[in-house]
Length: 126
Image 1 (cartoon, rainbow, N blue to C red):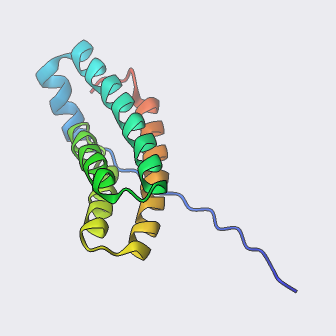
Image 2: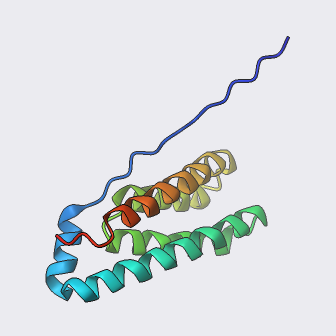
């Protein structure tokens, strides 16, 4: 008799509060809020685009898209997301399809939780 086991995985989301504080200090509350909103929109678009590119096995474009995702995540203090995105790029560079599959799945989980974390602090200034 076969047994089905469901594995639920949560990613630890790290927000760099110093990065966010710097962003708010440099830009002011309204501008920093706008930057965070635009960054969240761009991250969501790039994650969706990444899913399509991964499904199409277009690793060259996937690499570009995920690399830009890394920069945006780093800009707004989403350190875990930036690191996982960089790990995806490293898997592409190493031509390791097995590691890419696992790491890309982790990227999707981490992006969902990172975007939720930013929504949860939206409106809270440092």
